[in-house]
Image (cartoon, rainbow, N blue to C red; front, side, top):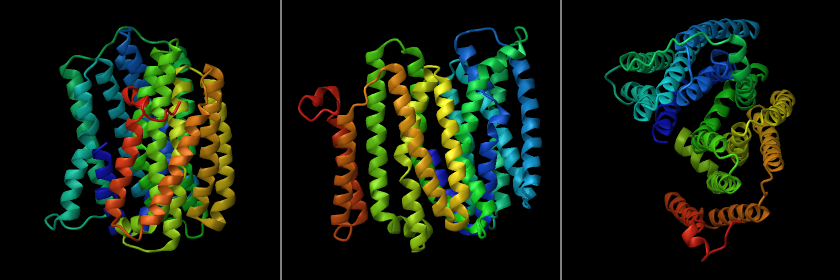
Length: 451
C-alpha cells in the first residue's frame, strides 16, 4: 500500500517527465505486451505450488523449477517473435523488459515456496524488497546530482539489478531453511489439468487490462505520444487498484475455505463491495471534478486533452473493483467456466472497440473501450456469481452508492473554487470514512444500513 504508490508517483512518474512522453510511451507499450504474455512464464504453477505446500501435500520442487526454466525460455522466444512480428525497433528496451519480467516470475515462484511454508513475515519483506531498492537507487539518481542524469535504459538496468537481488535473497532463504523438496515426480498431465484454468484466466485478464496500451502505440499515427499520455492516466488507475488487488487476494482464499457457510460468504462479499465501491466512487468523483488540478500537480501541464484522458480512464475504476470482487468469488468457488466465458466476451469487445476507436481518437479511444468492456465484465461477473451462489444483489446498497457519488460530485462542484483542494479532499475522505464506519455492526442500528 505504501511502497507501490511511492514507486509509481515519485520514481516512475519522474522518469516519464525526464525522458518525455514519446520515449516513455514506447516503453509503456512494450511493458504492456510483457504483461499480456506473462502467463507463459508461469501458467499457474506458482498457485499450485503454494496450495500444495500449504496443505502439506507431496511436491517435487526441483521438477517444478525445471519446468519454470523451460517456461521462461518459451516466454523469451514468444516475446521476441511478437516483437519482431510487430516491428518493434527498441530491442534494447524489449530485452531489458524480458529480463525484468523473467526475474519477477522467478521471485513470485520463490515467494510462493516461502508462503507455502508459512513464513509470512519473510514473504512480506521479500515482497517489497525489489521496489524498495529501486526507490532508493532511482531516487538517488533522480533527486540528487551525485550520480549524473537518468535515462530510460539506466532506469531498466536498476530495475533488473534490484529484482535480481530480491530473487537471490529469496533463493538463499529457501536453501538455508531447506525448503527444497524432491519427493517424486508429478505427472505432467496432472499439473496441466490443475493449472490450465488459472493460466487461461490470467491470460484473458492480462489481455483485457494491458493490450490497449500496446495497440495504441502500434496503430495510431502518433502512437508513442498517445501511449505516453495514456500511461500518465493509467498510472493513477494502477495505484488506485492496489486496494482491489489486496481485496481479491483475500477473497479467493476466504471463499475457497467458507464456500458452504453462506452467511459468512455473503458478509465477506458485501463488506468488500462496500469498501471498494465507496473507495472507487470517491476517487472517480474527485478525478472528474479536479482532473486539471491533478494533471498540473503531477505532470505540470494544463492540456484539456490530457485531463479528459485522466477522467475517462479513472471512470472505469468501479468496474475494475466489481471484477476484483466477483471474479475472485468465481475463482475461489471453482466456477472457472463462467468466469472464462465472460472474460472471452469482454476481451473480444475490448479489442474490437480499440481497433475501431484508436486510429481516430487515440488514448481517448482506449478509455472508451475500457469503459464499455470493463463495465460489461463487472456487471456480468456479478450476475454470474449471484446466480451460481444464490447471493442477493442488494439493490438498496447500489442506490446508496449512486447517491453517495452524486453528493460527492455536488460537494466538489460547489467547493472547488472556494476552498483549498487539500482541505476539500480531507473533508471528503473523513466523510467517506464516516459512512463506512456507520456500517460496522455496533453502529449499524443507529444509521441507514446498506443491506
